[in-house]
Image 1 (cartoon, rainbow, N blue to C red):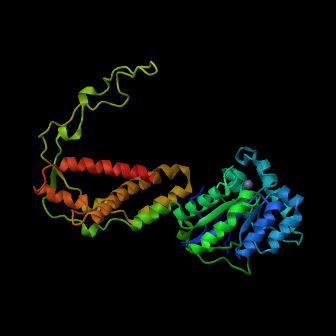
Image 2 (cartoon, protein in one colour):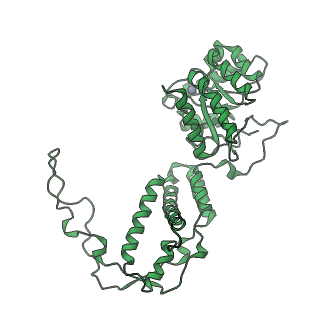
Image 3 (tube, rainbow, N blue to C red):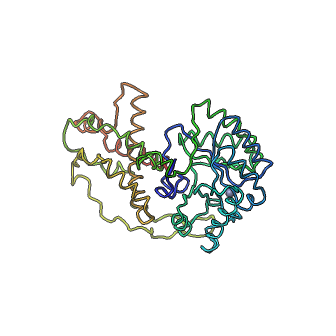
Length: 400
Ligand SMILES: [Zn+2]
């Protein structure tokens, strides 16, 4: 049971909030029906597996097949709406038209239900083409906009096997979430039995979502349970390298790397020959500022080792950065940079973890190694640092 007003937008395909599912819990959603030929088969398959889903029905389809709407309801599924005419670019429509689409869709489905009840206040925007105005309007009406956590591309011209593969792969990647399907596609009909069997085999549970009512209050949840995206970063925080193991023995400084270690050819910067390919010569001057003065080698002999506290990232700080990313685009860049840096650091630590696990008893983390090298056992800490920098950068890119 969910309270739409408490959580007006969900689905990590577009938002960083989603249903508060536990690991291995899946919510099935079907868009664009009812279309008797296929919708009825979908209902039969779901019934055979005792699975309940949410159907985002199109108003015009409901008008044409009111019996199909009642079948969905009578089978115990959640009846929700998906606009009146399924416009392809609702985000580009004037807001008045979008409002009309949403309201007419609800009216058509209500009429088809023909029992005085309204559909669930769950709304999926056609093609997920939402904009701020639509979001605000939906929220003002107490509607919860459902994006999804992953599609299975069943509206594309792909095989049923592909639909199955994509559904399972994307689910496995996230471990839980809202699956977006369409009950008007033959390939979905063909893929669904296998998807449901495999979900059962792999220990997934299908969660049926219904709107909370005064008699049926919302399932109690904690705010952080609604935060799935970016799940990997949240997980990464919990896998933060164990700082207490950090070895701080040895001197408090490291030798400064020599310029020759950095592979730095300053004399050639910007002096490339014109490129032949398209006849467009490169600018003789590089667009970035030239680094004119480099400290001459030998000015400094050592650099301070960073303090342990530098590597600490407090959980509340991290969470508030994520939360601020949720609030608006202005802060997204800021949160991104936090994500990026944590992803880099985590990538590094994980890589080091692998290295340690793969070849014991080789020295574990590079971080642990560095101070010992400074003590005089290894001659090339600068080269080591260079390798570290590269591995961090690669890990950062992979993460993206
Ligand atoms: Zn649709």
